[in-house]
Amino acid sequence: MVVDDEPEIVTLLRFVLEKEGYTVTEASNGQVALERLGMEPPKPETALPDLIILDIMMPVMDGYALNMRLQATPTTKGVPILVLTAKGQKMRDLFEMAPNVAAYVQKPFDPKMLRELIAGILQRKK
Image 1 (cartoon, rainbow, N blue to C red):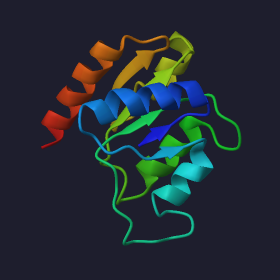
Image 2 (cartoon, helix red, strand yellow):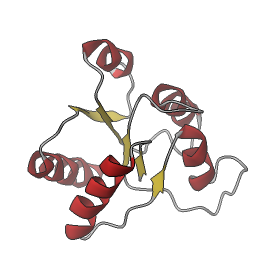
Image 3 (cartoon, rainbow, N blue to C red):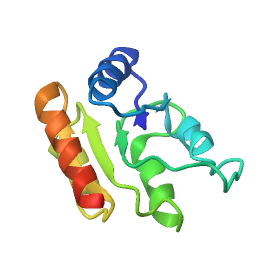
């Protein structure tokens, strides 16, 4: 799942990931992500993604607030998060202690490096 409010980033990530054979769902902010994850309103039958690529600065609900909700929910606390943001070290520090954050990547990013990083995260999850 890609959670980012920048359509260009979502399009690039979708292209890169689908080219590798991944199925991609998207959300433009944290609130939409909660709906797609079956958390609000509750839909326990909703399949969870293997990974969430999460932007920090978004309208309605930012990535930090979304991740707090994910960590507080038993069904989603184990879903690995890859934080992808234009913000620097200060934002990285906010996520440093989050046990579900598998990686932190700063925008702009190298698509090849991101593909390899995602493959490694998903391999460790298995």
